Image (cartoon, rainbow, N blue to C red):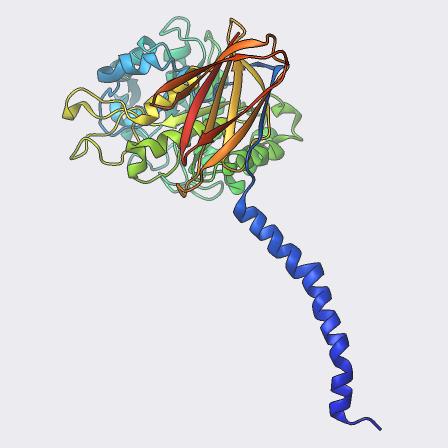
Length: 463
């Protein structure tokens, strides 16, 4: 009869075999997958000249301004804003900053003087107003400026009067104004989608007020402009709007993140919540504040914020209809550069200066009006390709790494070129240019370009 030790020795081969199987089937693939994700995928970009995808989406042509001062803030920088060719400029704090609403003889009264000046400045910059309907006027509040209304019907009167004043053909007569119901209700006021502080009550009163408006130009209304994309907010709001037959032209949220994939995940998730509701088939998706950090951060004063802006714009193209970069001008801090979100400094310290994020928007605007296909993007290196009205290629390539350490030599292949002879110019973001004359008999041409950490370049191919 075998002893206990002999039995154990006999089991060694079986135990060893099981360990090998576990390593091969479970541990090693998991480790390889983890290392692969950590290592990332390098780019090998392919540009197809004939792969025209249509009009260039430009979600970055939307800017926001906060309410750091109880006055019209944009007049000192209007020319700089105009140069960026924004489609919309978003304002919050419109009721409390400009003291629009009061009560006289028990009735609501409206003074649009201050807000009109701010809206006129937006119009003079070549943009349209995007008005965040916030915060609660003292005349109808149960407490402070972020408290619920005493009577949501009175809040509806305020919303109706606002839409009629700016969109009404007999008043300011502005076409295409966007009205967003509140700003970050989960933060400013601690609203939820249930209970005493119920955002659904606010939205319902707002949407019903919009439905009462007559004689107005086209406008949009939506919300909720939460601090992030939260299922208990967006999905409940979408279902509530559908079940109560309310108008909602867009859903909105804010996103501050170093992780650019988060912007894409947000869009897919929001669309999934709305995809089975026929009444919302034309729903639009807006990120009404975005940047890399919701807190004060020195990156906003330097190149990092600019590279994040370039890469973030690429991440949202085709999935986000509007992305409102926050913000236009710094608040009045104790020094000129203090990590505030503005793309321009405050005039308190002399003539406002343009930060690198300002130049990032100009860089994006240099792209052509027609988008062409790009394949082979990697984990860090992304690209937007376009053609201009002359048929020349304009291609932006950005290497974004929040850790600031990844550099890459990027193979670039140009396919279906219309001519063998062309000139290609590489222009560094906020840097120099170099030009190469190319003579080839092939419709395909290849090169390789080096990108340092957190760098970007525009390539112009002229035929």
